[in-house]
Image (cartoon, rainbow, N blue to C red; front, side, top):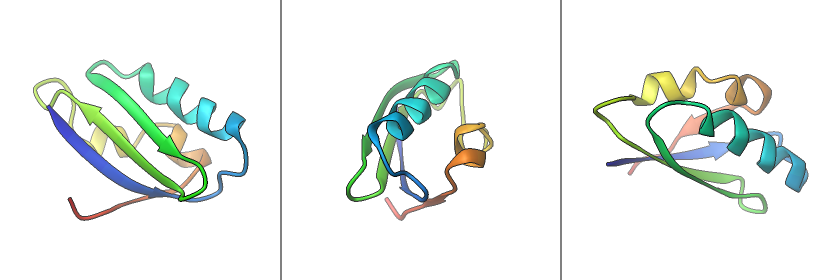
Length: 72
């Protein structure tokens, strides 16, 4: 299990959070998606045997809401 920590831009409401969570949850290998709207942060827990950071960052969620990887 790995964690990807992100700074996410463009979120303004809980619907934004829900959209990101729904889109990421569709990816095989995503275990959990935790988003802090006020801080603009996200932590995606995933199975590194199935999925990698690059595949996560290519998800449609981050076309809608640009994200930048934070140091772990």
